[in-house]
Image (tube, rainbow, N blue to C red):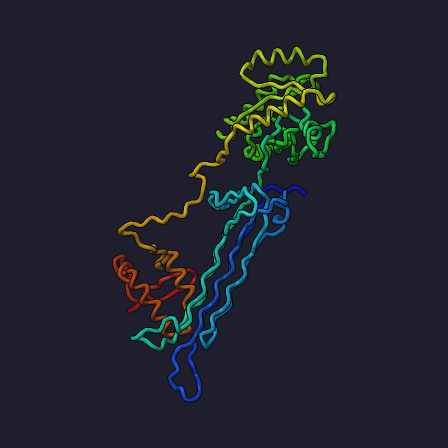
Length: 424
């Protein structure tokens, strides 16, 4: 089954919890803290496997979850890091944040990897908090939660040349004749529902990959028919080879067919609009073909047109050689603009606070990644851990900001789903 798009939730592993422990041995009454640190949670990593051609393995995985790091133990034994989860994907897989629709990664090379979700760091054991002023801390940290993301994976086939055109103009037949590919061929529209790839080898040992892409219909740029699926795969190709039924089989008009194709391509993306193109005039064995070809060249004198007959297997040598020559001159191009990508740049301003406070029906709601992470890693069953949490909040100005906004002692403060009383 060919699958070229799927949405999944990825949850990286939580860090292991730190340990609160003290050395207890005979003749060593004041052994001191010896709680170990927790191990790191597992990352979720996508890795390109050039042997894969579809995202079908991901289609039935709604959630991918990594393991938690091992908890720390006494005697200063640190917990082991959890194993990373490596997910194999085909070349040409683009990973989006399904919420923002920004691109996280574009995986186009064999063995290329990308960490989709980072595992949480392990919590520190009480030994890590020991200082000269506090040599025996009675608290430790919980592990940090791993990243959670809803992502969309899209596969765009990797090919040098993309065969495009209206349904049933002979794209699959052409691919089957000049390569070893065996696409489904039939005398009805939309025989090709998924891209087919074939490797074309020349006598001079040059080779390139050609893709037979699903047939185009009017309105494809807006998603009609196979729409975006066809155009998305065409984005990856270096050359667009328009296959035109020059013999007017089934009453087609070659000029109108070409205009419809160009209209949809121009409307979809500038990168697609500006790609190098040639025209393959197929079905030259039909009686109207020569006259139609003359009219076509009058209207489009700037286009490179290569007449062929798939039925008689005529005209392929010139076509294949020209495609190989063009590919030798073309450079690699970027598919996307920089602004399409997710940005991880952190901007720091002098007065910027790492949290926000708002009053929601008398409850002071405290939000911010740094504070929420600190909250999740605090053991509220340990008094010293609670005091440390309060000191941290005061240190970043939460108490002062609450008072400035009008909060009174005894008011309720909310962090995530938990309520606290605002007091000294």
